[in-house]
Amino acid sequence: MNREELLAKIIEFAAMAFNKDAATINENTNISEELGVASSQRVAMSASIENDFDVMIPVARFGKFEIL
Image 1 (cartoon, rainbow, N blue to C red):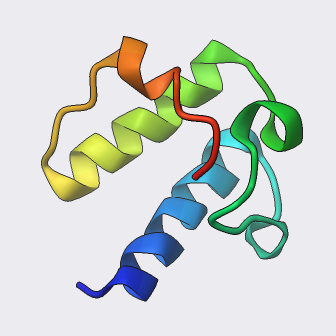
Image 2 (image 1 turned 180 degrees about the vertical axis):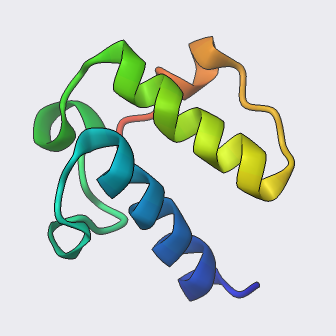
C-alpha cells in the first residue's frame, strides 16, 4: 500500500467516524477544529485503523493527534 492509498483509507475512516463527507477531509484536516472532539468518534476512528491495519494505537496517544 502506498502513501496515497493509506491516506485515502484514513480519510475514509475519519469520514465514517465523524459523519463527514470524505471529499472535505485531507491530510491537513484538524481533527478537533474541523471534525469534532467527541471521544467516541475518535475511538471509532482508532478502532477502524487498528482493525484494518492490524496495529494497536493507545487511546491516550490517538487523542493527542491534531491532524490526520
